[in-house]
Length: 338
Image (tube, rainbow, N blue to C red; front, side, top):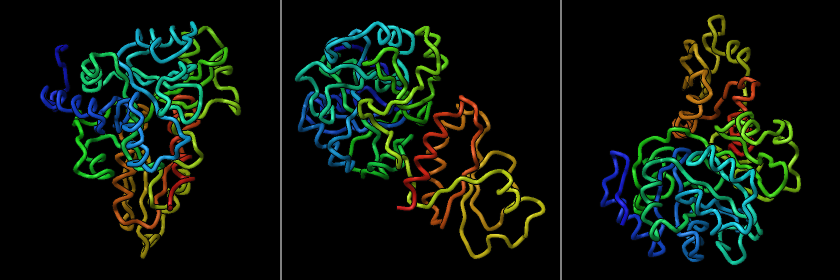
């Protein structure tokens, strides 16, 4: 058995117990650098079915398979084109998922009825520790976000328990460092294309592959189905809407009516500065996109649990660095209030 290297909050015996349960076909809450995943043996169809049941996930919605190292790609994919190898070498372990042609008969339950597979090598030390000893380091873990389908992704162990109950074993690896889901790149076409933006930027991928950034972001109407790209996703139950800074200032700024919002419980998710807003629940997030992403889902959960009538989120900057966050919040707005 490999030496177990873990986050300080997770003891080696907890890793070993998690692996035992996974190899027995059970589910485990697993920290990654992006969000917490609900993990199962990717090659055990009954175990993967438990993920779909626990999340209420549609059967045709594929799940990403997490693997220990890039050298294992050939076990899962029938072909690993050179662009995929370059991306894995440059960005794995890390928040990047590669869509590849699936080897026939491998991980059928994870594919959503397609002939492709999404593969990722996570960098979180706890996820790496589990993968290093699961099936002798040769296995893969199906691990979509550990929440009810379409809802806010969890970035702490407490979020997972709140969503899925206290009976689930959850390895507490602390708050996720990235905080939003991985960038998904379709490597079944040339040049590859980005199907879901994430922390890893199109500019970095384009530079690695020597292609134009615009080609990576081209329309993907005929692309494989992948996780997290439905119009309504990542959503609070409280109605969520975009608000400009001008709207926020008019409603809560220094010259605003002191009684604005009286009688209504409103939440605000915005950049600094925070005005005096006696009739609102206000959460301020940093103007740096990486820091904003790391805190976003926890902030949404806090506001969603506050019994509010509405949440206003400040419009994000239009620059490429904010693309993934605009994507997540746009889908959250569409799916909110249900």
